Image (cartoon, rainbow, N blue to C red):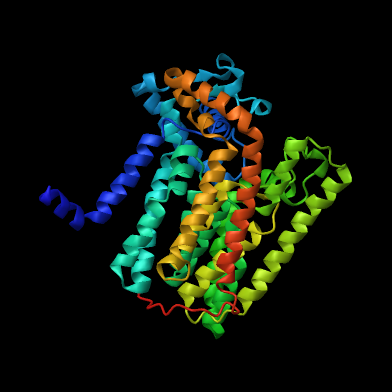
Length: 459
């Protein structure tokens, strides 16, 4: 026992990272978001039958680049492990186990597909943990803080659930956003531009970082050096983005149009509330309790108001960031990234729960340097996790286990039915609570965002 304790003390970080890795590997095959993973299963079949150019979904880097190795890896492994490939037809299940009947989910993918499609997320989680270690260790020259940052990411139950349980790729753009941050501090501006373009091609939100980065380059250099560094960054960013997006330009334009100029008439306030997710807009979920019919004019006005609110909040955030001196580049740049995303989270009507992954690396950097309290970090993570587990109730994540525990899952669903109204109320409360905690985090930097950590930059 003494030898075991000694080994754990010496190799504490490796042991804890192994725990996080094992939890993920065990969870990956047996749990999945019933609609999202089914959609990727259909994408995989289309790709294998019709070729790599058959997929037209957005964003391009996931569907048109990463789905290719996922599909062919699954096809190869299916020949080796056929017993793990079995799918469950949705029509063979009791109707109560289909949480999304309107989405017409046809099958529950098998254990092997669930595992393979999540492998990029597992790899991303590991790389992001290692990158956090490297960044924090370089910024603080404190190995203990670097290890703490690594564990705050890799053992965060919310991160584990989104990547390994749900199976969503938000960890990938979070990784490339952090890579962008790292290369900026390393003064490798061309590589930073490439990383940002890949991040945008995975989820659009890293595009918010473009303006803060321009401010950063403008404030930290003068004369020809400023011009050359800006050209390196912007040239590689736009050049790489053109290579990624141009083959799918029609779909890209349609996606942007749907986001900013969506048809309000297409929103059914009963089936799809005006707003939901980790936001005060989740109050619109309460409409499901009363089954109210909302006037089409009101729907249109609120939909437009949401977009205008985004424009106002983001503009205010950029104005505030323009005042940053960037004399402490690591702290200022991290805070600028955080502020940009918070502006979106506190304005747009839909903040899906998995989006919180985007914020976590930035919060960790602030946490280990004492700018975000531990209780705040864990509280906002818990709120996001509980919202996630209630929004799609837990039994529906474990449909891949139906052949073995189908009756138990059905009993759980029947037990939850009388609590449906309470579930909706809790979702509305949790959405508001998330916004409140986010505002509190920003309030900690209220003094004109002049709080600065004295980082020793060893990058």
